Image 1: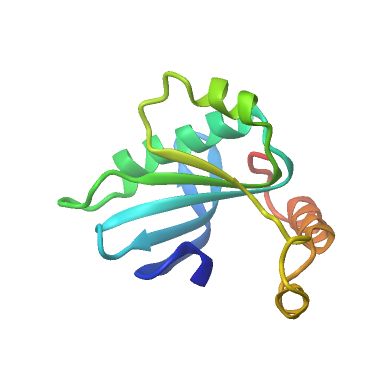
Image 2: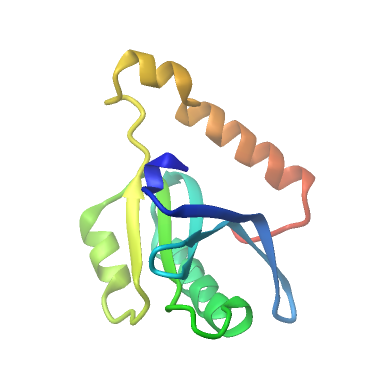
Length: 139
């Protein structure tokens, strides 16, 4: 949570969006200073255009179904194992939603911080296990 900066509050993990089908947002946070929701999608591998489409869908749905009156528009963040800049640029071209893509850079952290955080392999294992145990939701 600290990596998202000051003023971030946890709202819900695996937030269920019921829009005819069940969809689950990995993390739904609130940025208190700007009074807005922040949708966070976690992907263990490389970012793909479809991940950004899914995130765009979630941001739109939160704005329409979840956001309280007076709140600022929702922001989306895709956290992935790696990203290819041209793919991200083309996938975001034409999107009107405020969306960002970042990668999880475990290997560049100092050793004491690496010990405190899960490895990318551990995150992948948990996500894979969670996906097989829970109701299906977008990858």
